[in-house]
Amino acid sequence: MADLKRKTLQMSSGKQINLYGSSIAISRNLEIGEGYAPNILSVIKEQTDGKTAGSLSNPHKLTVEELMDLADFNIQLWMDLKAALRKYGQVDPRIFGQEMTKTPSPESEKPEGGRKRRAAEKESPE
Figure (cartoon, helix red, strand yellow):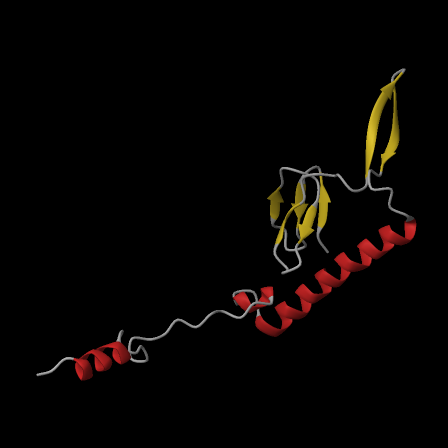
């Protein structure tokens, strides 16, 4: 299992990824990145008389139930990512829950102005 120590994400494979911050986040469309700002729930370290004391920062005044709801939401996103990786593999953009838009091949493209050209031909006398 992966572990995060001293701003380094250590994978069970041995690979290490240096991070700028100290957290990893997942978005609703399952993209993964670093979560920089600890602005929902965090500890504020204070130095007093040589001892490190901490206080809690909870600016939105979330209750324990709301924090558990947030944890459940994030756990579900990570579980969805695992399911998508099992289904599509790591190199398939469909893991993000978005189908790729099909780009038309040259054979399937219709000539531009087909109707307009025919209408113009009917109107113009020869």
